[in-house]
Length: 154
Image (cartoon, rainbow, N blue to C red):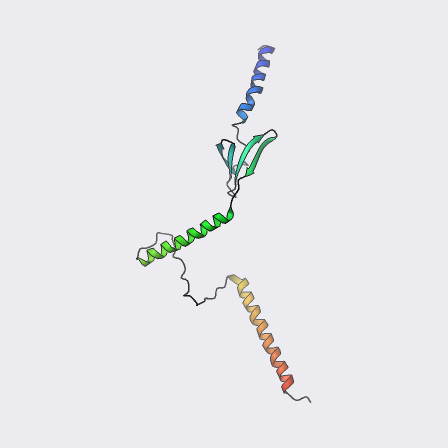
């Protein structure tokens, strides 16, 4: 191969490389990210957090910008779907239709005005015990003060 042919080959690779670089994927973070080609570059999905970003190649490398997410809208939709799911379960049970395998009925809610105590773990129990302890000591203190006032000094 002559020097001219070698120079032409190197020049063509150098000129063609930017064309192929547009289709090259950004670093996938060791399998953490999934990419889909879009007009602006690539759509990146973080498989751990669920965050979606738009990645595009710049002069200094790849830049990914997080797509805006309205968390309140998602939370409202989740709440709506939970209510709808509960209503559907209630309707199936009322009609005597068994729920599909693995689906548990929603816990019964107490009638209006009737409250059920609910303790979630040891921390709630510890708070109740501390409250009863404080109440007990206040009662004892009140009895001691009453005895001091009621009994004659002497």
